[in-house]
Amino acid sequence: MINKLLIISIVLAFSMGTRSQDTPSLRDLAEERGILIGTAVEYDPLDSDATYASVLAQHYNMVIPANEMKMRALRPTPDEFTFGRADGIVAFAQENDMQVRGGPLAWHQAVAYWIRHRNLSRDEAMLALEEHIKAVVGHYKGQVFAWDVVNEAVHDSGMALRGTDISLYDSDSLWLTTIGPEYIALAFQWAHEADPDALLFYNDYNTEKSRTKANAVYNLVASLVEQGVPIHGVGFQMHINASEPPDYNFIRSEFARISDLGLQIHITELDVRISDMDTPRSESLQRQADVYREITNICLEFDSCTALITWGFTDRHSWLNTPADENAPLPFDMNYQPKPAFFALSDVLSAN
Ligand code: G3I
Image (cartoon, rainbow, N blue to C red; front, side, top):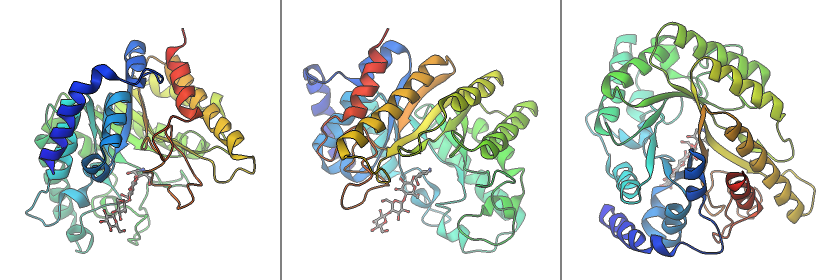
């Protein structure tokens, strides 16, 4: 599998000089603006679909493995680490001069089955999380430049940390219920010990639109900074519905106060679904492009916003996929053709 990825990479390395003339390369434009442009990638299409790999290498200078660095993927048993698929994505990125962003390291979802189905004591849970974080960050030391260390730790209500009630539904955090709220600071500390040069992020969703959630995330990261915890940035996921575009000045004010803490901002999982819209599809796609345009503009307004990442790049492979391609949330369509959202990105990145 990995060999196949390397062969695709070598072919791409030779074909980079023939980048498509009719569509500008997003990565070339982003590099001129001094920001990273990234996407989540899935191993299977990368391994089997040459078009997926070539569009990816042409337009992006950063990847996040969509699922392959999650605990459940890496840790089938207590004693086993299955790095093969994640290593394949990292090798592809290196061959194509792309950065790699990793994680999530401590998340309430995708917890290894052998952990979720045991009644761990506090000490056992701490040992398991420490060992996991140190082993994974250590394995990719010097190869993964930034990690989502803690992901989605704040409850949707914004009123508490996720998992404050004791039941272990999937929406609750086993890390909070076993270790307590200090798991967050500890996770950053352990990641920092394993790779002191890596940038460490707190990542969450709805922070572009929910006042209570945004306040809770701000208060959490401000308190980490104040305690001297090694945190370097905040990820705004931005899974957006085009029928309810965000208040862009709200986003500006959030970016401003996070920047004032001395933290970087990465837009980590941008996608814009259109299935709730009652407009003709061509108009919906324009409205979607408007959201991509505004978000990219805001990122460029802030020196602290150093990366813009979409959660996938082609509608062929999205977590929001429906058989009818109703959500169509990404800049390239099912056939890898650029959509209005792509041209919104390229227009903003190429503007003076
Ligand atoms: O690969 C198996 C396949 O072999 C099996 O047949 C199939 C049956 O369900 O499952 C496949 O794995 C699925 C995997 O996606 C790959 O498609 C998992 O069940 C499924 O849980 C997993 O969902 C991922 C989800 O996170 C949970 O980990 C999505 O792909 C991924 O896009 C989504 O990403 C999250 C971010 O990590 C955090 N922020 C929200 C974002 C969207 O939910």
